[in-house]
Length: 167
Image 1 (spheres, helix red, strand yellow):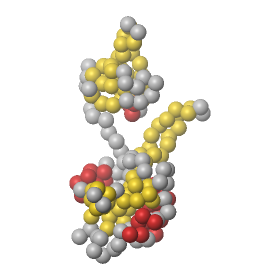
Image 2 (cartoon, one colour):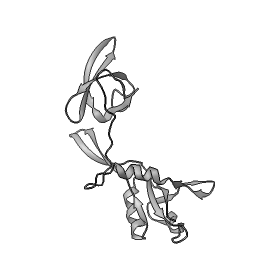
Image 3 (spheres, rainbow, N blue to C red):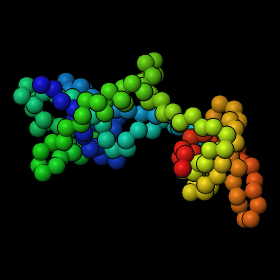
Image 4 (cartoon, rainbow, N blue to C red):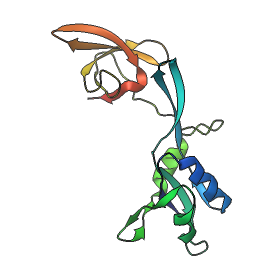
């Protein structure tokens, strides 16, 4: 019976490892996301790995050997516990696949629906770690958050992706 296994890749070589594994007739899952980031040239969209340095491999060990995986270009090795390759539960893979867009293949991450007045924490960017109060959406990709900074309350607009969710 086939199972899913986690593969540890070399840094930033997930796509190369996936390509080489597929060429060897392994079934692979390489979940990726699109993320907006600020650069010197302005806001750009980057493609990033959902799990940096990891991808998933489906194989039936009684039919197809796992031995060639560790010598595949871009692969550092299989994730193992006690010398035994770690199996990833089918439910985890199903959850990832359920969030994948059929056309693009990218995983769609959804923040929980926030109600005005809900406490939130900013998880990335220059305001990382600061807690505030969700006020309202400010377009498709941004939200208004009330922050208490330097003894005064200020309303700021931050990318929706910068929120870490509810506190």
